[in-house]
Image (cartoon, rainbow, N blue to C red; front, side):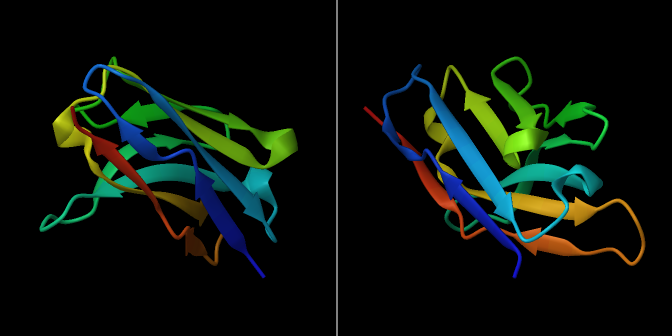
Length: 118
């Protein structure tokens, strides 16, 4: 059974930092591209950052220069370091895994809440 488990969310003041973790199990982690998405109340889920199996990273314009995605394959873990957090970053953050080979498989975690507020 495939599981993606996020952790590290919480309440932080504007300008603060958090590091989210996504631990995967039940899949061959090296063969999956991993992404972080977020969904704020009343809004659609949006892509935040992705990292390929080869380590190529991409970011949404809204988080470039503030967030960093990284993966630690031996630990089946992907991190999202979030700095200079702003109230508009408040959302539930989800981890997503997509297989690079066909047939494509996609999995989601249960999400972790990030709230940026003074």
